[in-house]
Amino acid sequence: MIAINDILSRRRVRGAISGACIYIFLSAGAFLCLLPLIWMISTSLKEPGNVFLYPPQWIPRPVRWENYAEIFTEWPFLTYLRNTMTITFLHIVGVTLSSALVAYAFSHLRWPGRGVCFIMCMATMMLPGQVTMAPTFIMFVKLGWLDSFKPLVVPAFFGSAFFIFLLRQFFRTIPRSLIEAARIDGCGEWRIFFFIMMPLSVPALLITGIYTFIGSWNDFMGPLIYLSSDSKRTLALALAYFGQSFISGITLHTLMAASLIVMLPCIVLFFALQKHFMQGMVFSGLKE
Image 1 (tube, one colour):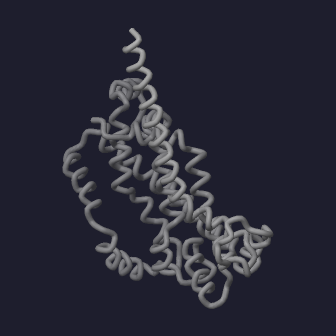
Image 2: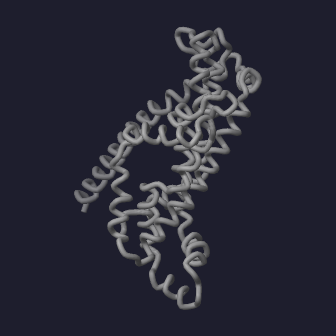
């Protein structure tokens, strides 16, 4: 009996040591990943003369909160913020609504050629953006949409193949008997979609909105190609111009403050909706 207790106690000690080593290793890795963010926050609160001190000053002394106020006085930051919010909002509405409609048609409607159309839709994901960039640009030039928000917003209302697949997989987990019962009660497909499918698909719709928000909020290539007026720049595009200004003499602490403000909504959104985000990842999946 004593020998068995000794063996169990040794196993517990080994398990505790092993768990402690794993936590230490993961904590060290997490700290290394957070190091650039910590340096950005520290730099955004420094005085201009303390940015390039050696050794680096991680805790600003003194803390200079005026760096964040300079962003709104030196550049039309609110204009860039309004442009980004407008494009992002329309992008979220367009992608979520159009992808959900197509996904519903692929999952719960029976029509000739459904399988072939679904395969063709999924095949578009194999085309890299660099292949379609030039033809798409030429098309928008012919339409006269350059230097406007239309090239950044209108394509969102034609769906996204990735989110169509994701939502289709989620819709397939909803019992078909529920849809058939609604049809027997006299519901049309539009009422079924908006009053049954959409409320039951909140986790998948949230993950679609989160991914779309992050992609649209941080989009740099689209605004760079289609927008030329200073009054129509987005935050991601404005940061690139801030970087050029830094090379020509603007201080780094202001650039870091602007970068932190641009990055903050994505961080807050992820942590605020983390539960729904993980739930959507689990349930949207790979279930037939």
